[in-house]
Image (cartoon, rainbow over all chains, first blue to last red):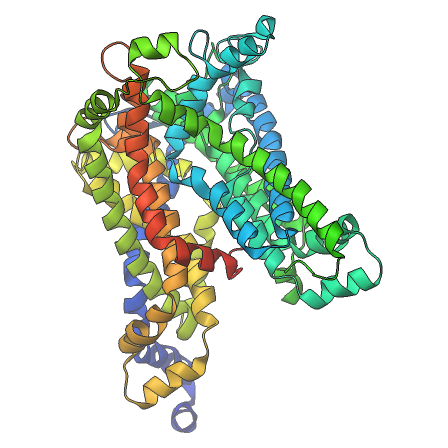
Amino acid sequence: MAQSESAMRPNVTVRSGIWGSIRRNWYAYLFILPTLLFILAFRYYPAFSAIFHAFTRWNGTGDWKWVGLKHFQDMPKDTILVASAKNIAILLVASIIKVLIFPLATAEIIYNLSKERARYWFRLLLIIPMVVPGIVNTLVWRFIMGPRPFGVLNMLLEAIGLGELQHPWLADPNTALQACIFVGFPWVGATAMLIYYAGLQGISESLIDASLIDGASTLRRIVSIDIPLLAGQIKLQIVMTTIFTLQGFGGMLVLTNGGPGYATMVPGLWMYKEAFTADHFGYASAIGVIMFIAMLAITLVNNKFIKSDVENEA
Amino acid sequence: MASTTASRPRQRRSDFVLSFILVCLIILTLYPFIFMIITSTKSASQFRHHYWEPVLPFHIRENYTDAWETIDRYLLNTIYVAAISVSVGLLTTSLSGYAFARFSFPGKQFFFSMIMLLMMIPGILQLIPNFMWCNQLGLLNTYWVLILPYIASAQAYNIYILRTFIASLPPGLFEAAKIDGASELQQYAKIAMPLSKGILGTLAILRFTAVWNDLIWPMIVTNDETHRTITVGLYYYRGGTHTQYGAMFAGYLIASIPLLLIFAVFMRQFMAGITSGAIKA
């Protein structure tokens, strides 16, 4: 149809082409309309609003006053913010190590069992913690690391005769951050483990058999075949962990509330406090913007750094 | 699968070692919860004098009723909010995922990029502005203020996964239906959706868990007891007047029951969805 139109009216072909296409596919826009409404209202508008208000002084009643770059200039002088940045860097490295090593090792161990029933049941047992709400997990760990006479860790040390190692783990500024990292021991995250396991299942048998014919030991197979082929899953876990850790603070709020003092403060929690207890909504938004930029930078670096098969196909 | 070309005695020995390691991991992982269950049966004085071992008589009735009386409202609130936001979320994202997989229309790439870009924007950026305008609209302390943002935050990830999945379905199925006179909506409802059960089940579990676990947003936007969610409730709950740990742990366990049920119902779809390998970068 467009062809004959072009013969008759050469100037307007392109425009009638697009509009015609829009009219023909009207239903497509209806399919995506609800999505667009939700994300415009609750994700795009707030994002722009946050970036805008980062340059304003904004109080709880919604009144704002333009202050330009003042908040960003104040940030390096904010010792608590700087301390929280150091903390989050440590926590990020720890989280990435935790999500790369333990779930992957566990997935490999299960994968190398010879009986399917064993593989199924071990996976099922390790998923059980997912059933417990995250806050329960955090609260239980706060209880575990609590002081005598109720903290499990301290009571355990006493029971096995190492009573002198007892410590107020979460209440001592020197050990608080390490205690936070210890939470979740032995760190076999259920989702990560399942995703790695699914990736392992996707490795073709012929590849494994070929490696065995070549005399490869299991360890060699893991290093040279499994891990490279799991690059997509590994990359996903790194990205998701980075995004989650950098902005997360619910766990810290429950575990230590940033304390003792500010020993376990993280940027997200500081932003929350600045906004909702100090009414510095503009400054808090500025913190949020900085966090956003940092996350963007790290994700881009990560994308460049690890090439996965999904991209190699493209 | 693990190859069977290894000789049998070596296989049995490696199985034994691997299983032993796994059993240790499982004990370490599950012990905090076992401790929680045992302690939830104890009264305050029982716990003070018998820290590790279970003690008769069990005080299950007192602890669990005490906990239930405190958190029942929160539990029901959270179930309500989660059920609605997850199902509406799946509806909207499956429609969009279907559209991006099956249609081509002007602006398709633009809209899709717009949605994918959201995965880069951290939720934390939206916290303050969403609070502000929900406040101005008088939406605080309602169910809507909880439900609507959860639907919005489900969009990017769900659409990404669903689009990939629906695009992988054989086009022939849809052609055949079209020839039989089915409209696009019918193709969506009668072909794409039934085939997507596995992936929809997986997404349902993931989203339900995410909503169930969310602490910060409910804490910011609700401060009355009527709309409080379970996470906020547990955060404030200390188990009676003077930290009765038995009742406190009982509360934690009660709060786990709905998730347990959801997992029990959707477990097969969940495992199938994750195993399909669709979830990767």
